[in-house]
Length: 257
Image (cartoon, rainbow, N blue to C red; front, top):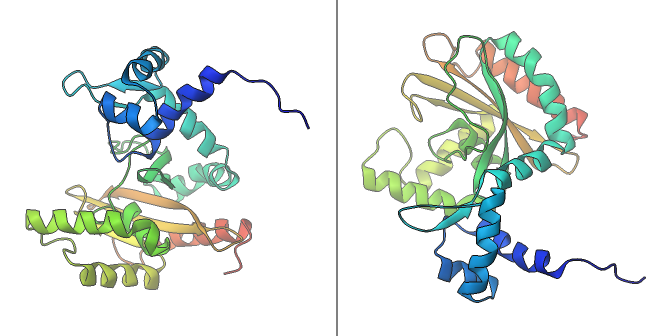
C-alpha cells in the first residue's frame, strides 16, 4: 500500500512536543532541542509557532518551556473519549447526589495520577482543577494508583516523595519504603484509599480503583469533602458508596473480579 503524503514540518515539530510530554518538567531551549535532535535555532522557530497556538508556554523568568493549555485540552479530550472515562462520567452526578460530596475521576498520565473530570457538590469550595497531578503519598488518588498499579510504574516517583517527606520531617505520612508498603497493603485490603488532613487541612479524601477486563487499573473514582461532614470511617456511607460504584463500573467494563 502506497504511503500517503504528509507535511514533514509538522512531523518534525511534533518531536518537540513529544520531548516535553516525556520530560519530568520544564526544559531549557538547548536541552529541548538536543533531545529532539535539532538545532536550537530550528527548535526556537517551531516553539514560537507552538506558543501562538497555546501548545507550548515559556516561563518569563526561567525561560524554560513547558506544554501549554492547548496541549492540556487536547490530552484531556483524548482521555475523556476512553470508554471507561465516559462511562464513569455518566455516573458522576448520581454518585455526587447520593453522597452529598464532590466526586472526581483520575487516570494515570505522563506525570502521574491526573484529574480528568469532577462533579462538584453544591456549596463546596473547589480544591481540584482539570489536569491537576496528585502526589502519591499525601493524596487518596495517589495512594490508590500506587497500591494498584505495577510497582515498576510508581517506584521511582514513590521513592522521590519518600525522600522529600523524610527531609521535611513529616510525621503524618510514610518516610520509608517499609512504611509505604504497609500503607499500600492497607489500601489493597480496604479496596480503596483514604487521607485525612494529609493533603489539605480539614479535608477527607477517598479514592476507589476501577479495573478493566484485563485486570488493569484504568481510573480512580475520588470523593472529598470537609472532615466536619464527610464520614472518614472505612465502612462509612461515603466509603461504601464509592467502593460499590467502582466495583459496579469495573464489572461493566468486564473485570472478572
